[in-house]
Image (tube, rainbow, N blue to C red; front, side):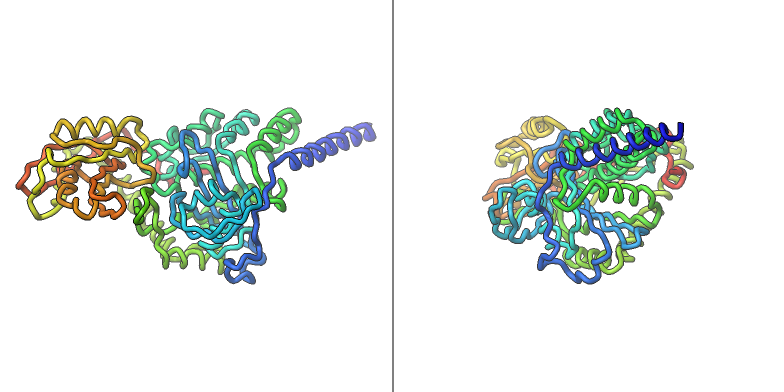
Length: 481
C-alpha cells in the first residue's frame, strides 16, 4: 500500500512539474530589461532588492493611454518591506534610446509615459521608468487585464478582503468592505473605473489591478487549487495567455512576488502616487494634455526607495494626516445622522474682479468631454447654445483633467472669461497651441451651464451642501482583513 501511495504521489508531482514547464514555455517572453543601463542610480544599493515593473493593459472600457495602469514594486532584500508606486499614464517623461520588439533602435523622445509602451514596447517603458526613477528594473510583468476575470473564473472565484479606500470607491462596482468572494463579473466591475474623471493619475486603477492580481495568484497557489488538476490546468492555461514576462523572469518569481505582497500588511507595504505639479498641461504645438510631475519631490521619493525601500517621511506624514481628516469627517457625518439642518450654502470666490466684456453671441467655443460620461459634450453644447453661445467642435478630450477647464489662445482671454462664468467651477488655462480659439473641456464636478450678465463681475453659483444619505460605509479602521 505504501508503495502504491508513493507511486500516486510521484505521478501527481510529475504532472505538476510537467504542467509548470509547459505553461512557463507558453508565456510570451520579451527582451525588456536593461540591468546595466546608465540611468540606474547607485546600483550597489540595489543589488539585493528586487524591483518589478507591473504593467496592466486593456483596462475595461478604456482606450489609448487610459487603458494602461503601471506600478513600480520594490521589495526589500529581506522580503519584509515593499513600496508600490503608481505612474500616471499621461505623465510627461523622457524616454531614452531603446529597442522596439522588432529590434529597431528608437531615438530618445519626450512623450506620455504610456506611449513608451504603446509606441515603443516593453523595453522602452522599462528604460523610461529607469530614466525617471533611477531604479534598476529586475522583472517585467505585463498583464492583459481584459483576461484577468477569466483567470478568476477558472478558479471559481477569488477570496478578497477589502478595506475601504479612495481607490476601491473609484471602481465601477466596488466589492463590499471586509472578506468576500469575487466572481469573474465582480472582477470586471472592480477593475473598470466608475467615473473615469475622478482618477486623473491612474493610481486608483493601478492599485485595484495589483490587489486583484495578488489575490488571484494567491488563490492559484492554495492547497485546494493545487489538489484540483482540472482547475489548476484551466487557470494556468488562461494565465499563460494573459501574461507577458521578460526573458529571465519565471513563474516562480511571480509566486514569490504574490506571496510577499499577500503576506505583508500594515506599514510593511507602502503605496504612493508620484507627486504631481500640474494636470492638463498642453505644450506648445501639441493638442494633447499631460500630467507634469513635481521634479524635486519625485526625485526625493525615488531616492528613499533606492536607499531603504521606503517612502519619504513627509509623504507618510501627509498620508496619515489625510487618513485622520477622513476619519474625523466620517465620525462627524455619523454623529449628524442626517437629521441636522443643512448648513447655509457657501459662496465661491468670484472668478475675476473685472466685469465681463464679450457677449455670448460673439463667442464660439469648442466643447470637449474629459469625463467618462458618454454624450456629455453634446449635452453641454446644447446648454451653451441655449445661453446664446456659438458652438464649434464637439468631441472628446485626448488627455485627462481633474476639473472643467476653459483653454484660450493669446487673444481670447475675455471670451474665455465669459465662458468660464457660464460654467461654475471651471478654471482658465492659457494655451499657445490652439490659436485664438476657446475650448471648454468638461471635467469631474461639472454641474450645469448658467446665465451670465455682460458688464457685471462674474460670480460663481453657491456650492450646494452635501445631501444627507444613509449610514456611511465602514471606516478602514473598522474593517479587519
